[in-house]
Length: 162
Image (cartoon, rainbow, N blue to C red; front, top):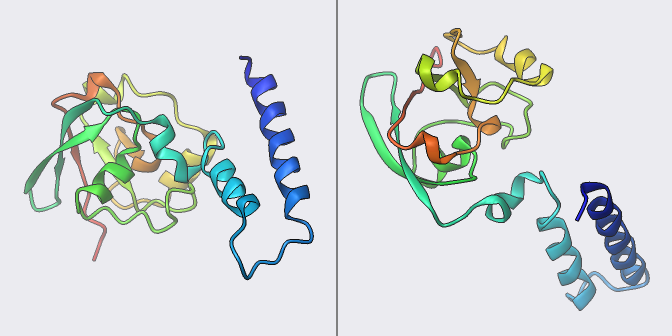
């Protein structure tokens, strides 16, 4: 299915659900509200839809704290590195919740890994300008999805200046 057709179908479904909600009391959950929640959780690129992009296949990634402590974790392919860190109680802030509105999920990659990452958006570049300990291989964890090729990589969490 083409992405244009998918967006069109999704929009039509969303509009249909919203029409069903009109005149419905918000005090009692209805099937329309449950349907809308399901619809919202499956919108492509929605930050709450990590599950939609994730498989159950995992790779091992090691997060390195500023003090050098290493934390190897199993990371689901398709998840953002910020979400993987949070799922494994790794201290990587992500103050904006992964909405690309801060630089607190700043990670530093090994050069060989960095060279394989997708290009940065202008918005990510702008946010990285605010990061502490910025390097040539810095990226935001909320913008990088885990891929099979990440198996065995190490990412460094820079000191946040506190």
